[in-house]
Length: 593
Image (cartoon, one colour):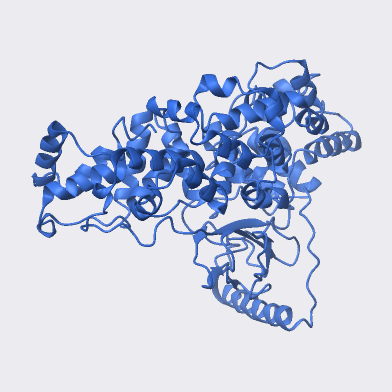
């Protein structure tokens, strides 16, 4: 059968522009067709709302044989035959062409069956089949055969349509739930999926679901079957909504949108002019409270927090902070980032959603907390079975060269749970957790017997100890994620959302040279319009303002030489407060803790 489809020009969900493929209706026929489609959309929407038509059952899209034969197989024959017609070429095999038509069709059916194992019907865009062919710089997976496509190639669109259930007569609809959001407790947030579309101009049914919410939350969606919905968050944490759309023939995959509701780290946004009050604190006390916040929350304190806690013993401050959800979230963010669980590989299982609460309650050992992340389905999305999984288990979980046990897990992922339940992993995880608080040598010497203690017990034992105090003398480089959190706290007075933190931390790591990446992050924040920056005429005492910014960002007063140089930059018409803050946050001292 001849196909009605050409290579799709683009997909709006991944590229700019409208991206909709039109069928070329013209004149009266076109106007009549458009009117009919509009009327059908109104009728279908009304029926869906009042329930008379019933909700179409949601079924995952299935890769279609006809679309595969017409559109996908020729691409694979061209790009992949040299490797995948040979034995031992991985999970996917291309068969040899057959002269007899029926036999050749059976060959294509066998190929399709092997490909379906590499597809993710719930999220076609993250199917291993696609990611193995995509440039790693755009989120692809390592591929021995090389890079075949970029995300803006028409051929890649064909593969994505295939994974999303396209047929020779129908292209799948595209859900568009909007951008990730930040919210406030008790304030309804609206999500609009009205930009979803169908390239065949079929009317759409929308279906929202609240896929994940923080433990203890009773929040519900205001609508499920409308283009837009609302959510009123009732506890701090991460809420994940998903949107599917149905064109009368196939449901789309479920595209997520994230709402983060996090406590502010200080009572207000940092004041652009007023002094913070930090000059009244004993310098040693300020250094101590900054160290405790850095170790427990992964960020410095805001001035109100420093003033509140600076006069308390370090262990008492740690006890207060360890009981907060922010402490648990900071650990989960750090661990997930280290394990590569970001972006499309963000873990969303109930076990992971519970982690901040259970960590704050002192219910988990370091090994149990890490195992919850490693056993989440996202870990296998980030590190697919095979060599990638073996490397991740060895280097990210056990911090060792790849060995026979790791290769076995690479072949049989079900064996991972057993490895993570062993004493070897418990010890590695406990010592890794100790590095948050102790010098490398002291962490490495942690007795194996301590691996059974929970994270709160361990942290309280370390903070304030001689080993902890000694480790404060030598500055340690801040992680990319820690740097981002510190910049948000110092400039905006709040924590970044998980999406903001991961995106900026990755940008910081990707740009060549650690300094260049972090300078770019600082520039993005300073230019965001959210950072309160004073005018020089608003500063009655520029030298006092400068000294206060040193205390806020570096935890100390400037030296005489620094005060002279920075004050000149502050008063220079080509400099000003923007330049001073940029210089402080991109200094080598700020990049360590």
